[in-house]
Each structure stands twice: as C-alpha cells, then as structure tokens.
Image 1 (tube, each protein chain N blue to C red):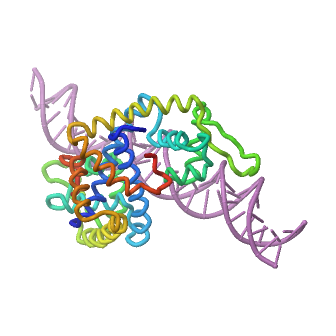
Image 2: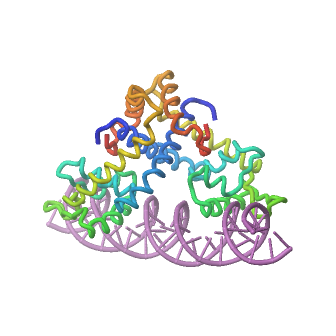
Image 3: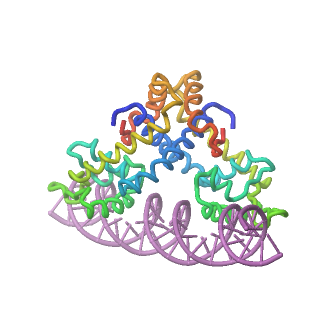
Length: 148
Length: 148
DNA sequence: GCATATTGCTTGCATATGCAAGTAATATGC
DNA sequence: GCATATTACTTGCATATGCAAGCAATATGC
C-alpha cells in the first residue's frame, strides 16, 4: 500500500462509497429513486431526443443489458420513461425520458447537488475544487458514461 | 448539472466505476477474489493483530453485518481467514487474517497496483498525482474505512 | 441480582444484477 | 436471395447484498 497511483485508486473507490451511501438514503426516501435510477434518467436527459437504445444505455451505465431491461420496466409503469420502437429496425426499443421523468430528475438533481455540497463544503477552496475536477476529468473524458 | 461540487461528485462516482470494472475482471480470473474480498483482506492486514470483529469490519467496508458473515464463510474454508472467539465476550467472533490470506493479499495487491498504474500513467504528472491524492485525502480522512 | 436493553452475529426473505441461453430482427457472404 | 452471422432485447438461473427477525451473550437500571 504505497505507490501514489495505488493510493489514488483506493481513495477514489472509498470516496465513491462515501458518496453513494450518503445519496442512496435520501434518494429513495425523498424521490423514490435509487442512485442508479437517477443516473439512468440523467443519461437520457443528456442524450439526443432524450432517448437511448437499451444496449447503449447499458454501456453508459456500466451495467448489463438485462439490468436495463429490468430497471426500465417499473419506471415505465410509473410514467417516468416510455418505450419507443424504431420503425427501421424493429429490434431497437428506445428508452425515452417523459416529461414526468424529467420533472422527477430535476427534483432529484437538487438533492444530489445538496449532498455533494455537504461533502465538499468547508474542506476545499473553490480553486481546489476546480483543480480536483480537472484531474478527475482525465479519468472520465472520452468515456461514453461521462455525464459531466 | 452545473456546479463544481456536483461535477466532482459525478466524476468520482464514474471514476470509481471505471476502476472497479477494470479490477474485477483480473481479480477473479487471476486471484479468485472479488474486489470486495480483496478489500476485506486489506482491512484485516491493516488492523491490530490482523483481526477485526464482524461488526467493525462491516462498518469499514460499508456493507451490512450479514454480508460480512457470508463473505467470510467461504474465505475461511479456503484458509484465507480464521475465526477467533473472544474469551471475555463470547458474542465477539473476530475475523483473522491467516498466513495464506496474507500471501493471497500480497499477490492481489500487485494486480491492484498494476491496474492503478494503467489507469493513471501517461495522463498525470507525478506532481499532479500528489495533488490529487491530497485533495481526495480530505474525503476519506477520519473515515474508519480509509485504507491509505 | 433480576428484568430489561443492548450488542454481535446469523438466517430468511426480498431485491439487484450478471451471465448464458433463447427469440426475433437485421446484416453479410456467397 | 438464401444460409449464416450478428445484433437487440428478454428471461432463467445463480450470486451478492440489505433489512428485519431471531438468538445468545453481555450491560444497565433499579
């Protein structure tokens, strides 16, 4: 447990755990969303036409296609998502963000920002947060999963 | 999707996903360990007497006590861990790192360092890695889960 | 010192997720 | 243009994990 790269990897993994733990509580309680469902909505909002095929969504979320199938079903029933079959290619079943989904996402984004604020406030200067974001950017840049 | 704190939180979560994906493949293939089992071994190695109660281990790993119970059982059978009941308090069942466990951990640590190297090399100067580690340190300092 | 509360661990049940197989649609090679 | 391969999605099964209940041991209040 020594070289700087190992330490950074460990700290990133642990920081993510801390963040996820903080988020998941309030997310399910206040918004009825899991953290992963929140990310699903975000990927759709960022996508052209607010829609993505299930396979593409799976890649961006770092989950399997079956997980997307199973996550989308209940969210469709709630009206947060819709299914849209492609006319040219009947295999494609897009997941589309509905207005209700966008509304829910906006509410949850507030919670996300609030929790991120708790975590970072008072321990980092604004300039340091900027440096941190730039260093982390190199880890996620080019990754289709990147939401920032 | 705007303020710097939100962006940093998102990037940390995504970076952790990238790292975990990279690690889990080689870990299970080469060492027969999941990433979480690797962390379990690390927590024990860092602990006094190389042992921790199940409850304490659960806290440090950010998992439930039942998960520790279930993770430890097969690792005990493999001889990587041992169970040690406290004489004073018969409720306490320590999880202890065995020599075989330490050996396995050392092998896996090499893999971890190698993968961390792949991720960070060529994209960060040594000095930047130092800055990154210091900024991340504030997220994990004081956390009993911190391994660095 | 006894009744009650708390603590540490385990187990049953529910949920989440991956993998592999299955199905249907489209693409490719000839 | 037909046979085969590939792609997109779904489903069955296995594993991982949390929560709540259960159990046993210890601590606490009186």
